Image (cartoon, rainbow, N blue to C red; front, side, top):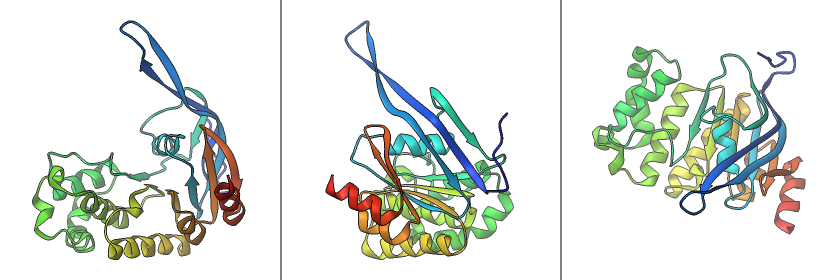
Length: 235
């Protein structure tokens, strides 16, 4: 197994990564849709990376690759040994039939956190999420904003090596958006690593140390936030 260089604190490397999905076309035939094509970049310790792009260009698929939920069809995706990632997404991560409390325990244990530690932080997690008595209701009954608040609360106390955020920061009320932005700012200032998918160019410019522009499954531009955002908006 290939490992990453600890000297440069490289956490993940994508080397000409490609991924396609099979789509049914008629009763007996399928066609393949290329979601990501020849994608190459690295993620280093302490970066806050913004991922910009229109809907359907492969941003969410990229996060699912980085979180090790799916694997690429072509190329190499190399992860630092023992790397822990958390993907915050409205479409992934929770079991709808279980309560918020149960999902919190499962999320922590899945990420290798001791059950006793998660239980000891439960009141703080519930407090940050502002869910109150809803913490003992099935997640299926939650609004998108409630799921977002719970996901952020768990991530705060689990403290992953890389936090992956899929548009979830734009969900919920103004108070939650301020709280979640402050949380990301704390990670930036404490040398933690975050990858943020967003359509909000101003947010990316404020929070991110690097921005990657994805277009039609390829990396169109990768670098200084102001330069990438300017090109993205002009396009």
